[in-house]
Image 1 (tube, rainbow, N blue to C red):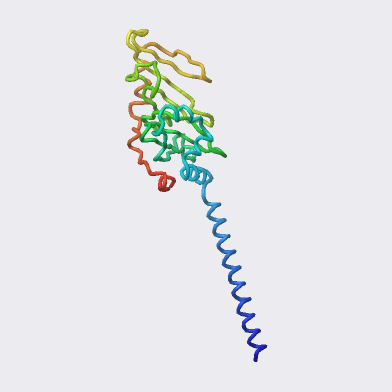
Image 2 (image 1 turned 90 degrees about the horizontal axis):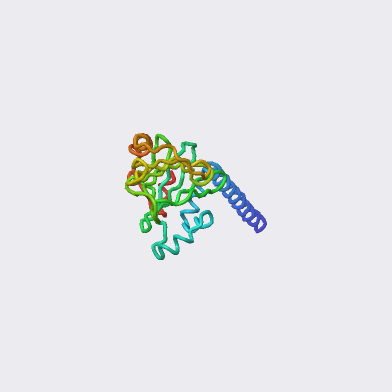
Length: 219
């Protein structure tokens, strides 16, 4: 009887071990499937949201640290696919600095820089900045910069302004490969760029922002 009891106990233990191995295998398989189904950009952005200071690995933030002091922080975000390539950009926003760091993903995290973004033009796939957040130059009121999202940092497409006492009262320029090129000094050209790229763009406050701890913004 003792031998049969020992066999029964051993059989039970063996059965439990087999079930445990099966359970672990199923869990690992499901986890693998979940990981395979999760886009890489989402995993990368989620890691940034866990610790926003990781952005410093991709963008030099030394000036912001010095200038804003304790107000240097990013505390909310949203995602939007500006260039419609299937991978949304991460807009890491700071309510204390009023600036937004934009990041994209192309096999790895790429910083597109930080700006005081005012609008996003969904139709022309552009990011719109009103004036300049710091420093001199430009009228601010009539100053607009239009950016395209590239694999490299922002590509400035248009910079328009109406400067009092300037050439015909208006100054329009465009940037190609970092070189400024005057396109026109006619106000009609300014108005054309403004109407096409800026006027009907969606204001930043229309994009719902989430706390960094809330992952709903990644869906």
